[in-house]
Amino acid sequence: MKPLIALGLACCFVFTPAHANVEEKLKAAMSSDIRSQAEVERDRNRKPIETLSFFGLEDDMTVIELIPGGGWYTKLLVPVLAEKGTYYGAIGTSRIETALATAPGFERMNIIAKDARLYREEGSRFYSLELGSLGVTDADMVVTFRNYHNFGDQGRAAMNKAAFDALKPGGIYAVVDHTARHMEPMNDSNRRRFDPVKAIKEIQDAGFVLVDFADLHYKEDDELEYEVGARSVSGNTDRWTLKFMKPE
Image 1: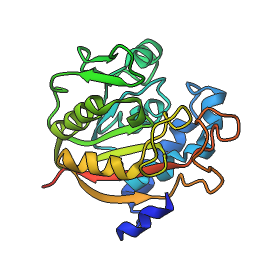
Image 2: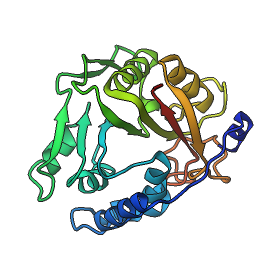
Image 3: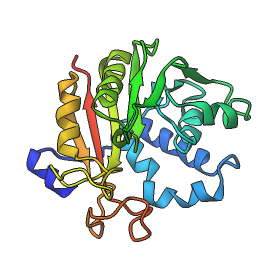
């Protein structure tokens, strides 16, 4: 995602004692027996410590994870927040409910927006989303990882609005996804990628301010040509990492 340097934004990490404490908790969570070997093998590529440090995670925050999937990040966030903070999983949470709800240490995992409807219109490749309020209005951070590309226009707008409404002023919206070329027409190879410039515009249109970006997941050898599951790029896709804020 090197071209975003043209936006004039800088990415830098300033580690404080609070960050060091979060890093210790993340390392402990990363070594937990609850994680599968396949999940552990993804640590090197996904860089959870660096990514969550960039977004500014602290252990006393209220954090909402949208569309947590199989719980790769859930298994890291819940232990970090368990003592001082609050974790909410929202939208498409059936897998983490089944796998983690009764797991030791996950008693404080909260599931919200159970009435949200995630569906595909007839003939569409992408999801639409129907939901009311998430039921939270004072979150410090909303995160979603590699989900933005799954939605059509309506679904992305609904997700961005839900994140905006759930955050307190100054709260952070953290979004990561696979990179598509700017303004490239949709095709079978890029359908699980998303143009970061378009994402920025849409999220700003929802009321957010772009705070920063990171090139943590920049992959020089991903030519942005192949489907993300293709053998040549699977597990090695270029991804954009964007940090937004709800205005004070």
